[in-house]
Length: 269
Image (cartoon, rainbow, N blue to C red; front, side, top):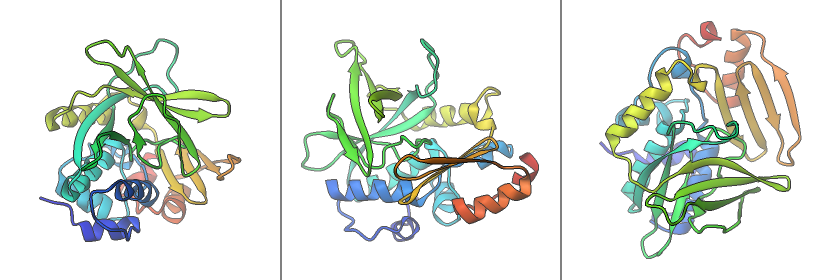
């Protein structure tokens, strides 16, 4: 099974040259993040999202749906594989919102990508559900500050001399740097991704048992967290609205997030 690249490019509105170059990686990353929403509707309606490539194609490409990190990154990795990039699948721990000293499980999936002829690697993260997510790939050079489409990030390395150094993605928020997630560079095979995906979808204390939906657009960012809808403009100004009913939620998903909800969404709200 391979991804139907023509349909995928149409889904994200990308019209570039499908060659394994830095510019292709950059523009594809940006188009994917803006073209396919982040959402956990399968989890809140009682099912575990499939990581089978045919199912990812049917859901994220052929339908007006989105997904969370394991779905987005698995699909994007398959696209990059087909285009001739060298892709390493990784998992990490989300630090955003964690308490002091809190160690969370490896519930986030990212990619380390090598461009042919380029000696370096790039952090690719198209499935991070946050307004501080990467919009473009980040060169994996510790301390390098990179602004991409209005967002500023860097990578730092903790315990660089240890057998498994920890790479930390940070986003600039105001004058401060805020940890987003931390990962190591040991490749993660498909069975481990399947297990992590199942854990995230079924663990009783998983944050994804509440509605968590994001849409990044050139004119701003939309986030639904539980019943709270936050609209953020490119300058950082935000407005907040409380969604009152399942019917309002369905209308919101269709009109603003570009999602056709699966059965049971209104009842689960």
